[in-house]
Image (cartoon, rainbow, N blue to C red; front, side):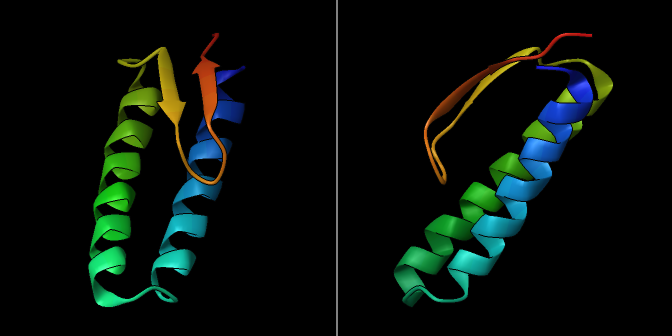
Amino acid sequence: MSRTSAIALLVDTRQALAADSREKPQHEAERHQQMVQDVDRLLLNVRVGRTLEFELEFPNRVHVIVSN
């Protein structure tokens, strides 16, 4: 997947996690917030080229290899 597509996927995933966390009970919302933070960190790393491969669990499990 291109870097641009990987970034778009991460942005979409982050938005879906944030929206989903608003509808969850407190203990699950906290878990989703941690997942949002993890995606934020991953997003930054993909943008600057430090991460070339990653897996996402939400909303579906996917393995991504980033190409330049």
